[in-house]
Length: 284
Ligand code: FVH
View 1 (tube, helix red, strand yellow):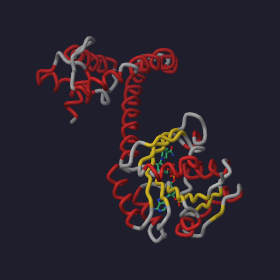
View 2 (cartoon, protein in one colour):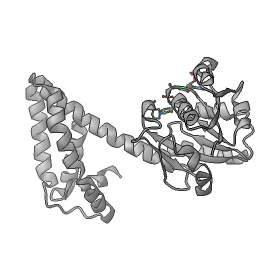
View 3 (cartoon, helix red, strand yellow):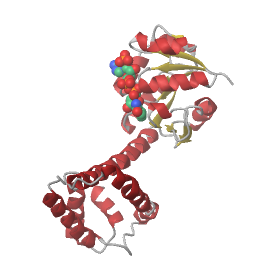
View 4 (cartoon, helix red, strand yellow):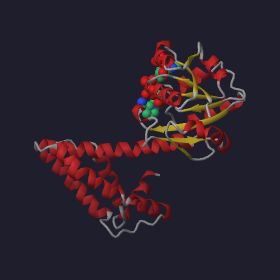
């Protein structure tokens, strides 16, 4: 069924969202601080609003996707939110989402937060995921409208959950990128082909290692860090060796050093016989 949706913020992501909603047959009202970014969407059938407040009035559901929460609040300030749903797909922190939810509720509106686990070209394609949080009934009311954008996953009523999980997923990604960069630097320093190493060895190895992590997560939940594979003392020696190898190869181990330090700290506290999941205790 065709719905009317307002999209505020037409950067790379906002444009992809608006285009996908238009392609799905929805009526889309668009607004951007610099108006020219709406031109291409208007040519494809979107309606241009003169102000953000006008766009909010035009639709029961408003999607906001701007630089940060400060900009999101600035954009919504002055709009009549009573009886409207605001879905904020701007990247932010759990505390910001909770505060923005209260702010929207205080103005009579419903609030959903969201975390986009995709880059703009992925929107509307298989593989794209959007995490949502906020009142279940509000999400249910808009789920069908939002489905063309990406696979929707509602995490719970607390609006802070979508940014929490978004940040956790990004954290996992950055850790993986850190390992990739260090490994690639080690291979490149010997003049070996990095692409072949990555495709044929590193990626399959990372997949194999990642498959153990759900079991590690169970260990963390139980607080049981007994291990049948290399314990922390073995890892301590291995990491010390790695860092020496980096120095010998003329490569900086900067992204690896925090891991070495945390393993050393845990072993020094007497937990050398435990497995790697026990390191979570050092991060609490
Ligand atoms: N692009 C991506 O791959 C990621 C994927 C995951 C989610 N992020 C988040 O999405 C938000 C928007 O990102 P974006 O890629 O669309 O960013 P830009 O293309 O740089 O567009 C920024 C828009 O924000 C508007 N804006 C900035 N400051 C203000 C303000 N003070 N008042 C009103 N609007 C503002 C900007 O307007 P203009 O400069 O065109 O006038 C753009 O519409 C972001 O949270 C990502 O982390 C994207």
